Length: 355
Image (cartoon, rainbow, N blue to C red):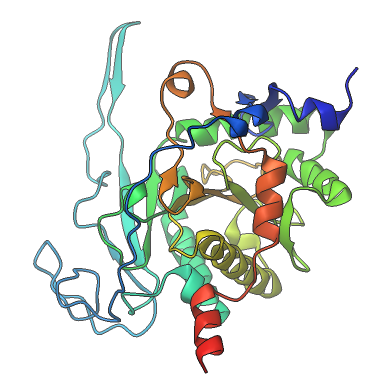
């Protein structure tokens, strides 16, 4: 039996314990000549206020409504929601081959800050804590809707991830059914809990803290790490160290530490390639279906596409689409890169050096 070190230097597969799926890791491919497509990096300097932005304070949105002159976080119902609350229920089951049903839901937009040019990485921890509080408020009132059984908080940052408006914001989609990716985690969490009477993710976090190989950052109550099964090059997972099914169970201290973890992680991301690091991120937490879910532990996924520079990204194509995810850079290598980044944003460092 080969040692772990030698195993991780040759092609091997790793299991994602949260989904039950596998990923192919090919570390030897980093030696090949071709290093990926390069494109011109976008280094636009954004203004604090953009009169053409439909998310900035006081501006008119696409539906004709005017935003208030908000000074902190501002939330509104998406003007072009993917889900609607007033949909007549209907189901189609013509045969085993044609199945469909209506889906009710509510889509909200959360503007993190009135400043057009402030991503999470450039916001203060105090302001990020305000965002966390708003997430809690939104989760609470949406969960009280009798037909809402799952609430997904997520952010797409950067044009690489399909975000057409750079104003810092996230979305919240609340819906009738538990969506597919969450359902996978639900099954894994439940199966482990039934067999062991312990929490799957908490057990994993304890092991990662013992090994200390893939940890990027941790404070008293939260941890940031590159998962053993990470698919995206600089993928990370953020989670509390004690079992919390949803963000509503976080203590004031944990909310502060969550805000700090988000601040440190996003600053480190930007510092890797000295660019506004794109990603898709979202919080997975217990369903709001009125049932007990002792197996659940909330956590936040970050899926950034950048690979070897600000202009080289990973594509999920070919084998990834037809077989299973594959990566070249190992999670351990990427964790080392992230961990080594400063907690001070590179822009701030530039200012300090100039002064």
